[in-house]
Length: 338
Image (cartoon, rainbow, N blue to C red):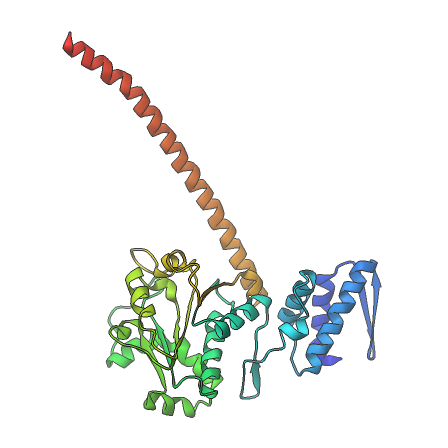
């Protein structure tokens, strides 16, 4: 019961938030539901699914509760089956998809050679990609893991960094190292790096290579140029898989188009290439992150609508000016001829 309801019954509050017309009362190992009949039935099914997740050894948090309720509301299947798939178990922690969008993303990686994970911050794009890469290496499906990202500063000019070339690029690649150390034995990671079994490198180092029997992850792909994206995708060799992750709302390129934005139009519809689009419903960080993402998305939509209206008004004014100029030009030509 403690694992089902959480510390200080915090998950009980999450269930009540999902079904506001239902009152839940807990006494010992019994949960009593009362309220509007259809919502009582929905809450009962949710609790039964959460019990199955707990029986399968899954530690629940509010994200799983909300995701399970959404899956049941959409009639997408059973949460205990969809969210019970473990990708990796490391240092006593099990990594698994926590939302339906993440489950579809993970399944797409198994079914396709190239997968693009596109979505806002906190949706687990990179984390799940890293977990699938480590899983493939442990299963001996690939011989090495290659992790890369463009070395682009996030809106700040850091100047020249001291040290060797490795010292200079390490700050840009630090998130990938952090994920590796979390998913693998920290003592094993340096050995794998030294042996070349795991390689972490900036995107610029990919030029001219053919990557066979490798699991390749390109992170922060929104900061690639179209030329860099084409260069990266054409590195694909035999027996390899690629995952490309990025958030098209957080582009740090100083000028030019984003390669990630362009590739969604160029490669859409090609077999064995899948575009997994995650949303704020798939955010697995603090609940405020999802609200922040939604607020910025709404703001961007308003700005785009205003920009469209301004462009339309300007185009209308230009047409009116051209129509007014035509009679004047004809009158001037007649005056000159006379």
